[in-house]
Amino acid sequence: MDIEKAACHQCIGEKYVKNIVKKHGKVTGPCNYCKKRLKNIPLSKVTEIVHQVFESYFQPEDDDGYSSMDGSRSAKVLIGEELIVDEKIADDIYELLCEDYNWHTDYDPARYNDGYIYSRREFSINKLDHAWKKVKASLSEEARFFNDSVKDFLDDLFSDLDDFRIENSKSPIKTIDGDVFLYRARVFESWDQVNDALRHPERNFGPPPAEQARAGRMNAQGIAVFYGATTPNVAISEVRPPVGSHVVVAPFAPQRALRILDISELDSLVFSKESIFNPSTIKSHEKTGFLKKFSRKMTIPVFGKQQDNEYLITQAIAEYLSVSKKYQLDGISFRSTQIKKANKTRQRKKEDGYNVVLFSKSSRVLDSGLDERTYKVNLLKQVAWSDSKFNPTIHLIKDDKIQKNQHHFPSSNKLISLELISSGLTYYHIQGVSYQTFEKEIELSLPVDKNSENQDMIDF
Image (cartoon, rainbow, N blue to C red; front, side, top):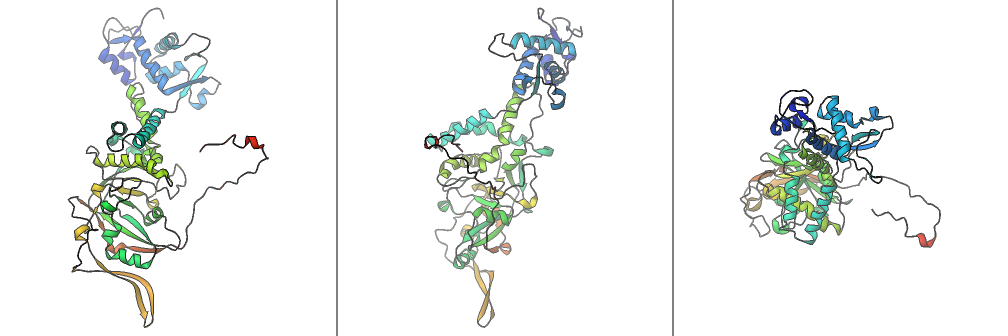
């Protein structure tokens, strides 16, 4: 294009670019398209913005005659529709794109060509995936407790947490109150162990004291958190009891509204509806694409010796969210990996249940520690002079004179968050286990030479 043209804000319908013209444009002469003396900018500046949109959102392919069927469009049509300009402006911008951004060599294909159609590209999460791997490596190999690279990554990842939205414009941050019970299960090998646990249920079914808290997926050694579930079945699944064992499930009622980030809902995040001409939108889309797979990264099953390293990142994220004054979270929730979803598109039903982890600051149980209650426990009920049946019963001892020992919780200034509902304690005898499996027959193929034994191996 020999003559530099200018376009005014009135000739551009797309709001973001229109506002750029209004803010930065000048009345140096009439608009080359409507001939009005309004604020305008050189068309080459608009072309730079359009090129960045093509680079970020659209991929070219040879036109095979099916563009009207799969949503692909020619560059000129796409410019007109996205920028909301008339055909003449779209043609001129396309001409500038070809002049300024096509490499005129035999080795590099043209970015813009009349024989191409353009379709939406999938948002790349490669940058964030690479950053995730670097953060995991940093925690394992550099610094676990004072790690600026981890903090910087998480600051950026959760910078707009309160603005996250899933379907129907809902937030993945939920509120759990007294209408939702949280269940915690424990496995026992004998009735004697069940008897001992039921004497002090707040102590034995609530979070352990700090000195007894073992490292888990969402907590480091010595940090006591509450691992629970919204249904007894999920709570039992998570402790993986062997056949023949005894399980007691204790229900807890929240004593205040608990603010919970539902990690599993992040896979339903919707992409930003901000203008694709805004440079920050592509970063938002890339983050959304990463977060949609985030719950998998946080809850992927880990076995044996892998746990120590793989849990470092999940522990760091849980602790980051727990101490943040900005987000004011009491815990996180996620689907159980022990219970398979029917399919990816199925919405979670209330009866499905899910795991809830309450951070240390939000896991104090009423009547625990020095104020804990003591019960008299009877597991057998005599039904005849020489016969009895299993009928577990507990009786609150009103005047508890038992000396507290060093294994009890010390008094705490933490706000009470939960109350154990002793009338809801339930005993289970595990009589069988059912597995959900994927079955695939192993194919016996033709024999191979010994030298080829290690070839074509697949690294999982």
